[in-house]
Length: 102
Length: 99
Image (cartoon, rainbow over all chains, first blue to last red; front, side, top):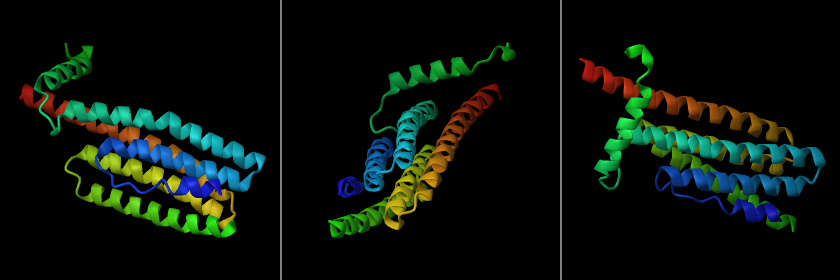
């Protein structure tokens, strides 16, 4: 019953990159919550909670690292953000300058 | 009631499969490496959702273990590929300035 409510959340068009992370997390959490409701057994509920917690923990980390990587590589953004881009590039290059190069 | 559950299961399967196909299209024609990695990450999450649907559909709780392991492996793959992409570009740029 509530499983059906979770399942109808899934159609997305993958507009651009980071919309997918949000929609993926939301839909996956809802589907797994519906799964827990349908089964309604303690061990399965605990397992579903573990999966949802793990996804909620790791999806922002993955999205953050992807955003950082995109900023550092400087692929074409949809606006020109030259000033911020240069600053971020400088910061990243400085961060990657390890002492072994001196 | 169970008819509604069956119907929503069918709709959910179709939507998840459609989203996996769309992510695969994005992975094939992604303009950059990051687009492909994001598409791969999203495909992993969609397959976790697919495992949840399959667990409800076939009344088998073993699919949830599959989903858990898949979430772990997908997170590791995303982090590793992101580090690889960032470090690779930075190294290329540094090599270019050195040469």
